[in-house]
Image 1 (tube, rainbow, N blue to C red):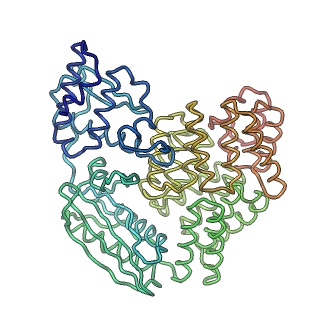
Image 2: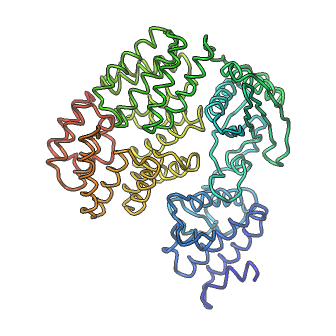
Image 3: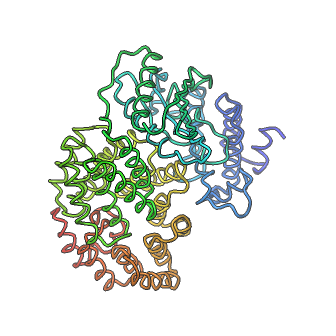
Length: 597
């Protein structure tokens, strides 16, 4: 069957002239250069156009497309397998490319609007004046950095790979002649996509990629530069180094890569500076591993982070970064409800103060102190001064921008500034799962649910085993009123983090909002029983009681959450979860404790 036959077969015999134009335009697109090698996208576009013209556009859901287009079985779960959303994003990008390059004179526009899978058809006349000008040719200095692959036999060098990528990001962003774009993983599904798809989407001319292999005390790092257009290698270089010198190795390779790239693009820029090396490399190695575990944001990861930071101090009792790490770990243990805030406040504050005392020029130290001032003291002006001090010391420290956004600017309702800082953090650390998660959180606070949903998809593509990614996805879907999708997201989070009371409370809340009160109350009973043995965030319990229409108990728990200074109440002025109770006379006096009036 020809493409034309496949496109026309499902429609009625007496279709109108507009349908004829749509069929002709579909053929034109499918036979274009942009779609010539994109078989999956052809099937996706053909199926959705057919169904829409047959009057079944409203039935185009992820499950249906997954089964009919991508041959998924009846057990296909769109929450754990994002193939439809990934391919929809690629289809939108490919359609935009077609109309930008080959279809500028076409009379019919076929597009796939965000937020759904039903294509829209419009006359292209009259739109040309409104369209953005075609993008300019990609500059040769635009580089896409992909995550380094861990090819070591034990598979235990991810922290080294992440650290090396971050060091390269730090160095390359210091070169005026290089434009570094953030990595958005196109290969999280089984489509066989390669980084050239991401490079084309992000207008990157070259792809910087690499791998790490470890044998004994030696490590081999291979770094390659690939032409994004033709896929040919431009250059490749191997580095054999001793693993005990981890920080120096990462710095050396990042500098070598930067110089090689400058030569390649014949630029004259120079680095703005390099991070100071640790005096004790063993201490820094332990600190680096601690940061890796900290960034997992799981109970196990946070506790492991504490161990590594303590061991780093065992190597060097005056190591400022280790004190900063301890401050952050204790703070996050409280924020994630692993430990009661009262048990971690003093430890977080004292370690942050010690970190600054040991190195007043440390951006990490000032960031930790700023975080304490936000989350424990609700001292917004003092925290902002510390964050700005950290950023002035090292503008390329991503956590300073990240926490300035979510812990200082967002609680004050300065959401435009918060988004700007989050996007800066993401540009500096494009492979960070927690930064990607909090970009979605700020979109959620801004009520931009479409952008939040897109960012959730990116977060899951980046790391499909990251529980917080599914937590924010659940909140976004809940706010959109899609309670089945919300529950599925929270259930996936529970699979990945079964001991987290936060995830169980979130699932119970969305069940309550969907009318499944009995199921929600069963989970609430389990949480009440669990609270006897360990800390359960009163903010989560308050939110659940509000969803169950039990405002009296909800406000009792919310009052305790403010007393405990739970992390969630900091953003109560902008968090959509509090919208239903904003008009209650008990709400404003509680929020006034934040000192933001």
